Image 1 (spheres, rainbow, N blue to C red):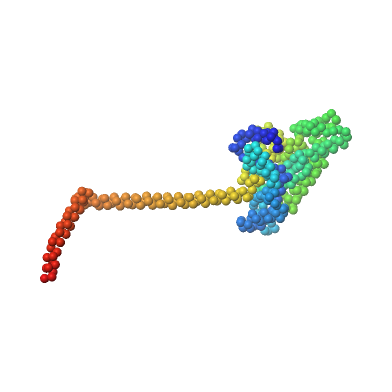
Image 2: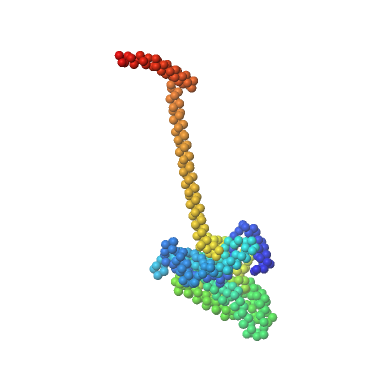
Length: 423
């Protein structure tokens, strides 16, 4: 993955599929075995204390060193545990080196990842987005990979349990090899030839093929060969479902959705699992119903089932998908930033309201002054003769002259008036 050839192939594949990478959110999927997922029952505490209680409870269950791992959690509603109301919390940890390695790989081709998640969370997207209708009950998803299998249990569209099983397609191929070796001791298994036969029988379940070694290949023969591996797988599935329904104390799974990598075993697997487990089982088709688009119509059921993790990953969104590069810490920072921005906006809005109120007050006051002026002008117009600036100026000059004459008479007769008063 560090080679330039792989990076060029990765980028060209992304561009070929999505076009402009700047116009879309790119998510990556980690190996689920690298991630430790747990579910906790947390006492109801004040919101300010909740994060610390969750962290230290998780740390008590499994040691956590935040220098080495990324820690995140998701609230999954309220439950009642032995009559006590509690919070149901999903927590997970992932090695920080794994996250950084994925980010560095995509950064090296000029892509900033929007998120990194795992297959169980990707499948959870299918249920949370109502991509297919499964209701709010409890159900399981069984994915059979090449070297492992994984059973995930969901309740109310939330992942509540995930467990890996070492039995996979490789184990079944090894069981076939052992079975053929018992029949034809010196026969070496031609895996390519066997896969071709399996694919042909998968496409035609009722068909029977006899190869050059005289082996009759049909669904029954294949089932007999891989039964030892299937029995181990069934035991693990049964134990997981029983543990969840009894020890954990939740509802029993109502249905199991089965998917796998392309192998040619899907019909045999589905039939055998359905017969061995009491729980109803069906092939996981992410394109059923309204999502049976034209592009998927040409795909076989096995092809559709193999695309379950891919479809789930394509539905990822930071709002509902656990994201190793966007944890509760980042969400809190974003929330704080939004609160600060809202505070600034509220303050600006308050200032704007005050300014608008002042403007309205000024407009009202100007209207009142205009009305008062109009009234005074109307009163002024009633005076006869009508006053003007020239008349007022002439009256002022006349008043000044009269005042000066009065002052002159006062000075002239002031002495005579004084003598008159004394006599």
